[in-house]
Length: 172
Image 1 (cartoon, helix red, strand yellow):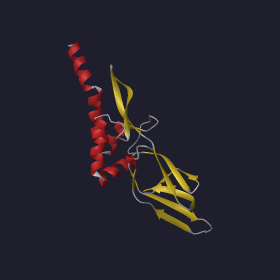
Image 2: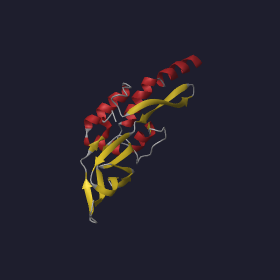
Image 3: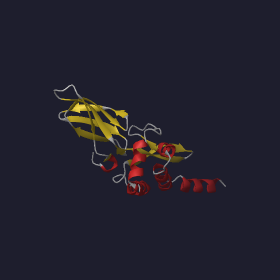
Image 4: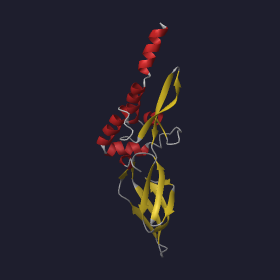
């Protein structure tokens, strides 16, 4: 009986079977399902709010969902914004999760003292020559706005940037 349990567990908890289940979870429409399958680039659990950009991507681009699901199932981390990593054990068997790759964007603008937001949520932006950088973004679709003052003016300005899908920028 013990041998049967071990053989069954070896199959069920195999890396490829876990990858298949994680691929289904990370491409779910439920933010909680996605959050349970993914950790951030530092290995920390994410919540439902962190995965909103990924859900936005899936809603706007069905082919991205299929491509990500296939890449995760086949464990092709060069084609997915996630990498399959060990995260503890299920009894005697390795437990795997999907670790999100961190992405960054450079925003070229002449807006000074800018606040960068995605759908109203403030993002941490660092000023650089000719614009700003936003680092440590979760894979997904971003609708960014830059708010601030134009050089030499006290008038406030808001710039709406084109929608950006950052899961494809695998060579960040």
